[in-house]
Image (cartoon, rainbow, N blue to C red; front, top):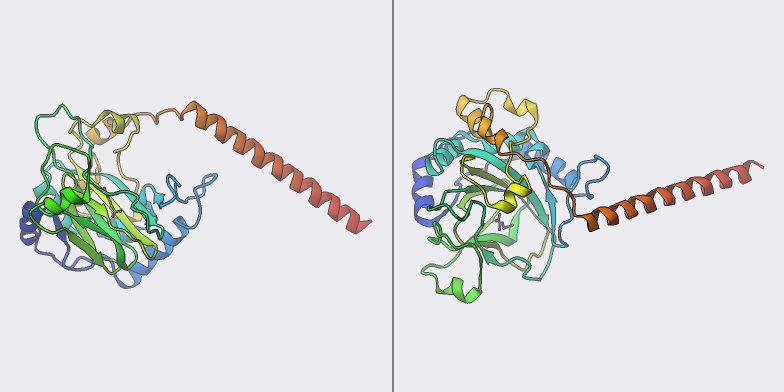
Length: 299
Ligand SMILES: O=C(O)CCC(=O)C(=O)O
């Protein structure tokens, strides 16, 4: 959907609150259904032997990396011309899309994450560089919504915050419940969280924009966290030079920021090797049992 959205109004709210709800859905109708059906396939099983799936990092969220690969509709929605303008005016003309990650949060009563703001840049920097996230809901969100403490953006400290600290902030949190296809932007230096309880599974994609020349914190360098986006190639058809630039096309500094993947921890490597050996042994046994059963049926 390329219906124009007033960038000046979005920017004014973003500067004041650090968060802004988009007034129109980014995805709707057949495009939303296509994205939801591809997404459902990604969150149905753990990524395995090259088959696209989710990463099971914790019991609460099924994490989908390179989330724009899910569908050209999602890539085009993320690069809606008004979003491109807001991102370039809020973050800077050199902003680029540096990560697209989504997750299905499983129903839970547990307070598994809490209020926090995001650490991402080198802490020795003498200013707070801007990073924006565009969140797009792929399911109707009536519980487990994202929430943001308005006006808390721009701070240097990156940590978790208690309910009492958030209650002491000047204004009440903005709770972003919305139907599937709706979206919002937020400055990650402000205090935010997913609310609990999550009564039904919640699907959301978070797309990150910052200036890739900003030095990163060591943990994100080691993890090769921010890197050029992977997108379905047909999503590029008809994109404007501004959209392509935000996506990272021709941006050498994005490629330069990439590091070889960090080696897997030796303990994990050994555990994965044992799991793989067990899987192959079980497959061999099952083949032998099936062969013997079919021979005895023929005899
Ligand atoms: O899943 C959510 O709503 C929280 C997202 C969040 O904390 C983040 O993207 O930093």
